[in-house]
Length: 46
Image (cartoon, rainbow, N blue to C red; front, side):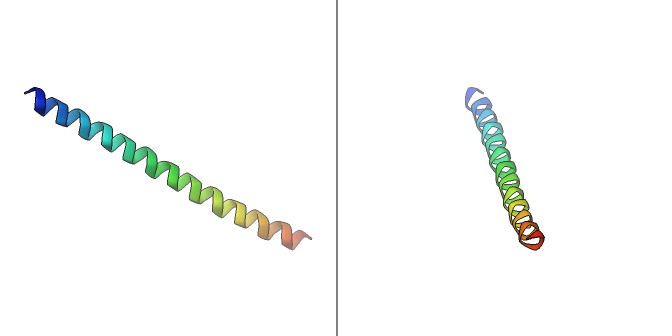
């Protein structure tokens, strides 16, 4: 019983970590795209 509950807790923690990493990667890629778009807009304005 103890091992089963430990496995459940570990799987939940790993799932949360994976979700956090995925969200951070998505936000980082969005930031990169926004930066590239801003650079293009700045070049066009000049």
